[in-house]
Image (cartoon, rainbow, N blue to C red):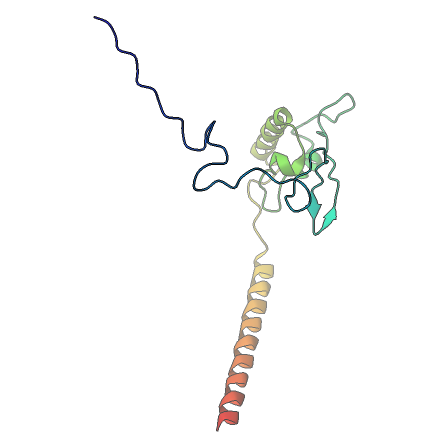
Length: 157
């Protein structure tokens, strides 16, 4: 029994051969200032309208004269903990992947030996003070709003 050949497939919309055709086509890419595309231009990232240069930091634990990761070195390990006691992610700390794993292990060991805290609780007195400040600010806003409303009703009468 002879097998029949498969039917020819239509090209996918937007695929090869459909360039510049179709309902949602924008046409060819424009060059120059209005198109935002220049052939041999160097890309410069912008922050608030000014070009900036961001230097990539190397891993502080990699390299020939690098510092060793030690679970007993609490001062070094605490640099890689947040205010709440969480381990900082790689993109913030600048540590490479292999050394980040070592760092996490060292922090875990230091926590088990009670050299580092698992969680850092906020000071209850400071929390109370911040809460009282928020309540006072809210009360002031409400008082000001009520005063504006009473002036508006007096002027309308």
